[in-house]
Amino acid sequence: QVQLVESGGELVQAGGSLRLSCTASGVTFSNYGMGWFRRAPGKDRDFVAAISLSGRRTGYADSVKGRFTISRDNAKNTVYLQMNSLKAEDTAVYSCAAGAKYIDVVATRQEDYVYWGQGTQVTVSS
Image (cartoon, rainbow, N blue to C red; front, top):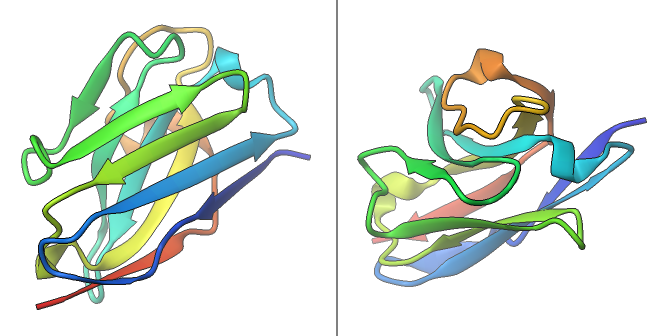
């Protein structure tokens, strides 16, 4: 059974930092590209960042470019999202996803992903 479990979400003040983690089980982690998406209250789920299966390629939404960094540790089956200079508009439920199997590309579309975590809440107070 495939599981993606996110952690690290919490309440933080604007300007602060958080690091989210997502650990996978039940899959060969290094075969999948990984992505982070977020859903703000009352809005659709949006792409945040993605990393290719090798870790050599990354991609970001314009709204987080320069502030967020995605990385992965294939030995630990874990993908990370380092979030700096947080803003109130970053408040959302953040979910990780696995997809783009066997292809070393950055996948930015939700339909590219087959496995999803439950999400972790990030709240940024202004």
